[in-house]
Image (cartoon, rainbow, N blue to C red; front, side):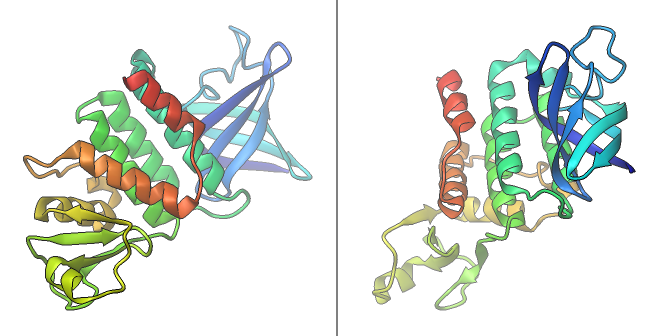
Length: 251
């Protein structure tokens, strides 16, 4: 049976001299593994379409639970990512998160478009790399079902206060006044300035095609990244080796 899908190659493993297993992120089937024959040859007809981070149209042959690339046509490439080790390491971290959290053989609406937009920003290097990382982590957590409730204080329903806090445990926020009046506050919290809360709301609630367009002046991007990283890893209850590598090359 032949299946035609569009997808992004988010992983590749060499088998033999000229073949690869590739992991393809798709809308229809989540992340699927396919065998790509001959793609390591210089003259391989599918080499460009099956290269890491390529956005391609694939014709896949399926036998049982296994896929094989019959043919592939490249649609977009993100060559600029590979020119900088930090950007390449971050893209690898993003791919590891997606590969290990998006199910196979199940629809994954939105993830393909989000990954394409994110790789585009990494490729163009128009905005700070720390901001790309923070946006990816918080929006991915939300798309995986761990959306923080940033709408208002969970106690008094105030929309904004000079002192607001994020509870990592359940993703809720509460204001400084309520923090002093309630004894069920988790010690695992992060303080949010008005700008920080605005940015996090923007990341969670904005349309995908606008997700990298806004950032208030003077925002502490490094602190935002600490929050989003901890939030994602806490809710997934795991770490990622490629995140550790990204941190090493960034030093």
